Amino acid sequence: MFKPKNISLEIILNDFNGIMHGNPEESIGCKLKGKLVLKNQNVISPKHLIFVFIGKSSVSCGPLMTSSNPEYRETQTVYRKQCIFHNSRSSNRKIPPGTYEYEFDFDIPGYLPSSFKGARGKIEYSCNAILVLPLFQSNILVKKSVNIKRCLINEAIPLFNQSNFSEGILDDRIQFQISTPIMVCHEGGLVSAKLNLKPLNSETFIESIEYGLKEQVHYHTTESYAKTFIASVKEDKFPLGKKTIHLDQFFNDPSDPISIDFRLCPWVNCDLDSQLINVKHKLSLTIKINDSSESINNNDDDTWSDSRSDTHQDDTSTNIRRFSSPVGSPPTNHRRSFRALSLLPPNSSRTFSISNYLNSRTTRNTKNEPKFNTKLLNIEIPIIITTKSDIPRQQAPSYSSVDEPPAYIYASMIPPPPDYCADTYDIDINIE
Figure 1: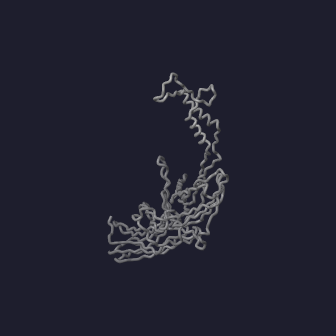
Figure 2 (figure 1 turned 120 degrees about the horizontal axis):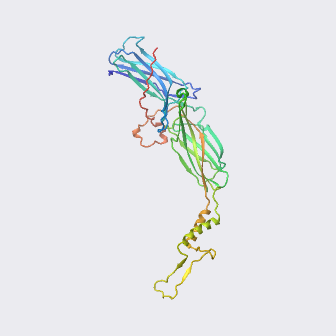
Figure 3 (figure 1 turned 90 degrees about the vertical axis):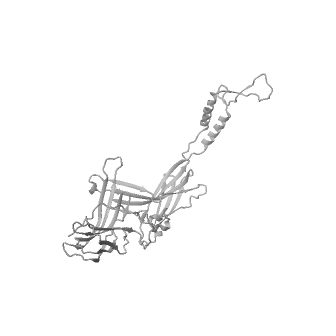
């Protein structure tokens, strides 16, 4: 099919940041302004020139590789707005050579979910310009992706005043108190928590604390699509990894709070609540304790029985040890033999061995040492991850110039993740 070479079409947006303020129920949304720029060097007779803003949500909840069941997929159109700038049905005029601008201006509703890209699903928005040409000529399609974000931070209330306090008892052994922020922005926001741990008995010791930000992503289909079966996949991951704090029971004061501080990066997704995809976050802590209350006590009879079982092996070899005179000593007419000393009754044939005696002493000392029962106790505190109300306009470095994960100070400069491959779905054109 013939593809015109002298026609160009471009989408230009005017200062669009895509940030919606407040909850979906109360948000007023945002405004999308821009224009289409059409340049042609020859006279053209297009059928239609259409601008479409569209949002789509799709999930893929596949079964295990060994399963013969099909993969459950669902795609929904979240929002669609169409503007027709040229229609050959109402106007048969041709477009002469030149440069033409077609402006568009409309409101995006505040209930739309934020943009998201995950392993099993995505929510994406795009601006599309379509120039439909006559038969035997390829249509011109231009696509420009836009990101929709939601800011839940109230500018009137400082962030340091928004905190959550939790307390409780873990496994009847550890009493905890923790203060965490309610809401943190993912562009370098600080997660600062204070943790107090107090053992409820003297036989419990805290060895270490492992913490990290847990991201829970839930992909699922709806009843209208799956009919009789709803596919669902849940993924738990730690996008920033974990860190471990080791405690010394002799030097750490239980009354001193433990500080947990780390910053977020834009690769942490914001909280999301939609029909197909849900994202939540929690501050996850794993406390490793050693408890000696369940240690095993061994008596002397068991130790002595072990010693006797060891010495029994020597009885199978010999009960009498002979010593010869050293070289150069005068010969003797009688050969002396010495029976090994025995701590058992005279009628017993078991003998006393120095090596067995030392081994029994070592075994006794080892068994007398306290044996700790190690346990892992978990705490999870919900945290809301949102975006900033105003993102600084800084040019992001290219991926080729970033060899290692950037520091938190450059969190706002991290480039966005790569786009998905070209979609296979078509954009519906409704012309009235």
